[in-house]
Image (tube, rainbow, N blue to C red):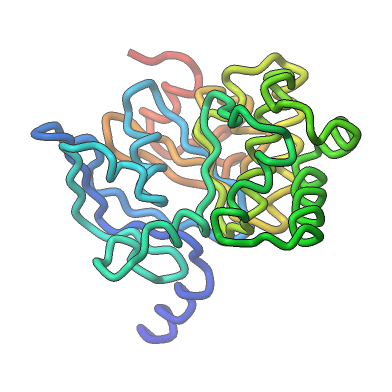
Amino acid sequence: MDSKKSKQKELTAKLRSEKANVWYGNKHVIKDVDIEIAPNTVTAFIGPSGCGKSTFLRLFNRMNDYIDTFRMEGKILIDEEDIYDKNVRVEELRRKVGMVFQKPNPFPKSIFENVAYGLKLQGIKNKSVLEETVERSLKQAALWDEVKDDLHKSALALSGGQQQRLCIARTLAVEPSVVLMDEPASALDPIATSKIEELVVELKEKYTIVIVTHNMQQAGRVSDNTAFFYMGVLVEYDDTKKLFTNPKEELTERYITGRFG
């Protein structure tokens, strides 16, 4: 039975953490977090500011490694491979696990060069491959129709919402299997936000998506499952509709009904 169970686990979890703990110096910021995230789903991380959601998200592409005082214990697995193993090549990992940040961060280059950037880093120079990939990625990011006649225009001339979709296209161009999004719409107006949300729902057909959001309505609209963090602890993790309509934990209920503090 056990081997059958572990086989099943291998098939169902794209991302998994086992007893993940994180410290910044002496500050214990993630405490014993176990989670399994299925492939081709959208998972939202919610919780008050400073509760550890972004730190936990960044464990999956080792972005916390840049912080001097960072220390991690436990396991973080992608496709059942421990990504903190010393043999893991971090550059390869980050190709597989794309990241979209809170504020759009296009490079001061053309729209085309922004999307092609990761491919060129990999040594891909074939013009038709670059052109096809740029077109495909911009289509996936629902931006192609708006920019197809202006590919050599500076990316910095785009609106904030367009810049964020360009950053998503840039992430998708290197064909990751996981896309992490850290509050991707918090700097955008409502119309741009709804475009990003529609995009997230479409993209899960091809990718496994994890999104940190302060906006609970957004979590409700885009995610299949939601994880509620509080003070570094994963308080509750469930199907989004269940978690919002019938949470198991009183703390979750207090947070989602605004009776917090």
